[in-house]
Image (cartoon, rainbow, N blue to C red; front, side):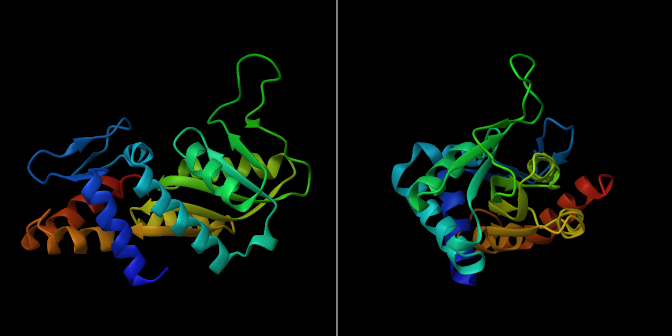
Length: 213
């Protein structure tokens, strides 16, 4: 993805409030991690123009780095990846599935919803990659069901080394529209963050996740 597109997407997230930065009063995640940045890309789905812009960029990234003929199915991670997978699949005229975080407790007890014939080449769509755990769990579920996955498409990544290493170890390419470095650059340039606070934020995020490595 070009630097221009990465900055464009970072600016979009900041304008919509999908990403918040607060050095003085950091955010506590459900996992217990405390971080000066909180990302909630679900907010984008309520803004038709901006969500269309994001879908355009997701499709462009797939076309440029995977190719439409190189995969058969679009898979969304439950729950945040589902709408994006649906819009991308619709735009491309591809089948779609989604993968639950855990198997259903009733019915057939499946994790994968939708039809995934064995051997189908699949692209996973995620809204946010932090450590990569949920995305790679989705990848493993698809592989166990007989599908193949070589790429995961995301809107934003924290660019954590542990995430990059985990994707590489499983033979999956992570294709994100934007990431932490572009976000902080745009945030400092557009007044969302004081320029001198950038290093502080980067160090705080590194400390927040270092025990997860």
